[in-house]
Length: 439
Picture 1 (cartoon, helix red, strand yellow):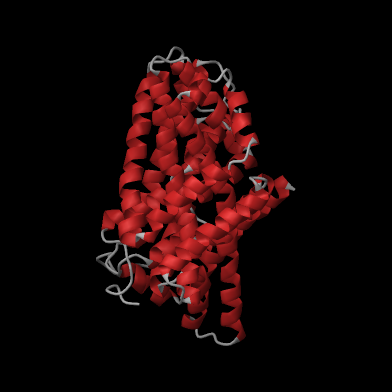
Picture 2 (cartoon, rainbow, N blue to C red):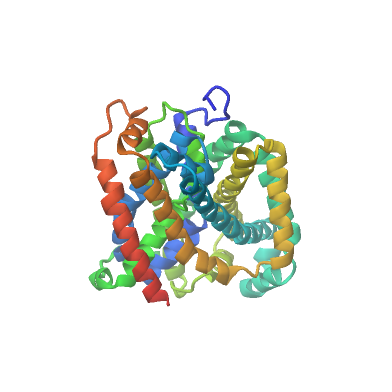
């Protein structure tokens, strides 16, 4: 389709904020502070920034370029990449089949993510009503919330997502990103300022920024830093390809990828500046895992002046970050229905929402271990597959020509070499190490 006929992002910053809003989510708010706390504070930040700058930045460029070049999500993008290579018959069918793996992977992750967003919405409602704040213990409240059926809250989340996505790319996804991502950053900055004045908060800053060099020589630090970069930047071999297919030909892909990586890293650091000092201020174990979000932070808010107000701010911000990520996940499925099966958007959105809800009726949130397997083994595989198709299968001159559009100058060979020999090679090495260390 031409830019005039296809629903595209309307502006440069609309595209950047939509991609960044997709990237900024639970991985930044919960997982990054948890990993930083577990793996030496600043010493986790160093390999993470290296992975983002060297691998994540390259991967975003590759996926967005592949999406814009083919005008498709992963299924047809992989097929068209092989066609550009001059392949026909079984080869392009195999490429199309391989493209289904990222789509199905991200959808299954989306099922579990929907439950998490529903928990966030449930805690937000409890914060507003006062039931979460006045509960005798946050752990008891959390167990009561997650132990009972969460289907009603899943329905509310999906209703919000469906209404947003029925408005299309420009009026739905782009507007949501333009409002919710800046709102998230502002609200978390407000929380960071408040946490700064907590007793003993300085110990958290000290822990976060004191170098512990021994962690740099632990392979697990680098493995988890890579996984964090992929998960946090939405490098799933699907989302950025789909969003790239909605980008105008005038979009500067290199600049956009850099801005997405910077915004996402900034969000992780801001989240850490809220959670880690707050945890230290109250003498709580920084490596307490998932409970940081739903148990530790609510308990901390209960001890603060105006704590209920800050609890509401916290869960509003978390909801904004989480729901925009969920929108991007489900958009992969919607794009597949539209582009692969020629389903009208309104029906594609409704069908995706209905299937997501029905699947959650049966799993009732019991997908955690399966999600871990997908994130550890399938997500890197999908990212690697997208990298291979973008940097190895698409002819280099065609790839560079696509990147050059909006760049203002011809793209050089550096991005191709970085994608082929740095990104793909290192992902294979770290992926094998990941299998070895998690076996």
